Image 1 (cartoon, one colour):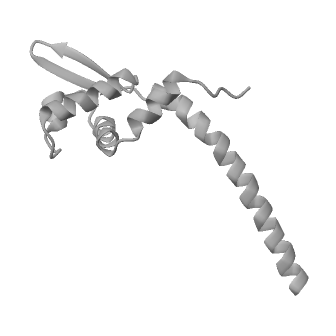
Image 2 (spheres, one colour; image 1 turned 135 degrees about the horizontal axis):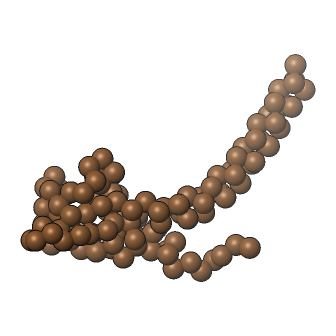
Length: 114
């Protein structure tokens, strides 16, 4: 049965909709365990703006934060993306079937013209 209401999936896609948040996740994928200031360094936005983005990512479960002394470190948690990938794969199968059918139709027409 297809679930049309899935709050976690909504949070995941909402978090991934922003290019800055996707870039933050990409950095964490390359260098897990960065401090917030290290993570924010290459971005042309303020530290509070980065922290708001991290809040959204944390609420979606895509980032975990740990505090050691005054340093807050971030880690990627890709688990919520698994459900998003499952949702997208359904549509990939749909389009693959459609494109395969189109390819078969075009091949049949090509053979008929020969």
